[in-house]
Length: 241
Image (cartoon, rainbow, N blue to C red; front, side, top):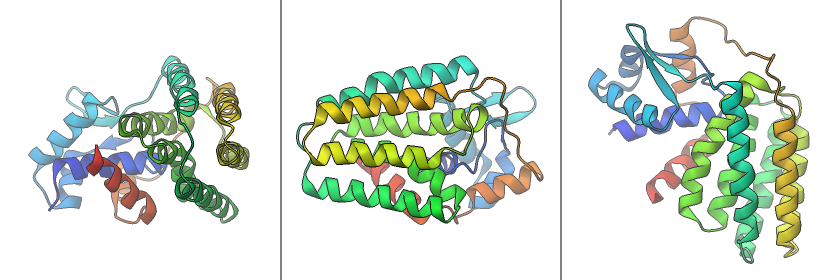
């Protein structure tokens, strides 16, 4: 059964995978047709996402994915700079099962980068931070990082080059290695450097734009062909929150 929560999840999944870009129009009827539900249910899902800061409604025009301002982009990284290093500082010793899971995640990132799979690459690089919070056992931080990672994906689409994926993958590998060695102080420092490096790539002069009709882009973004691991992971996490 399709619920408003599932529709909202699907939109967040598509943002994380880079399929829904900033400023993308979210036609109520198009989404209702895609999921075979009422426009009322779609509107309720979009209102949930509006409360979380991911969509906006424009009078007499409709719903759109937000376009974060450059100040919003700076604030997003400022928030991550506080939250994620602190999460590692207080992490304790991760279980070996968690280390194996994080290493596999980093390996999957590397495969997606080598295969030039843009959607899988985008989702995995963003999901690393969510996966890390989940492995460290903090469901409140996991929920927070789902939103922060999705917001970062929107920021990246507008203000960052997409050519530095391998550097991010290398950073993730180094953080996991530090955790595996029990050196949380090093992991914290590496995370801080990672976030600062990403923030330094912000460029206010950049702008992203899609191609094709708004209806076609929306159907492509929300159709059930996103990275399967992404769909399963997001559903699993949201059920726990």
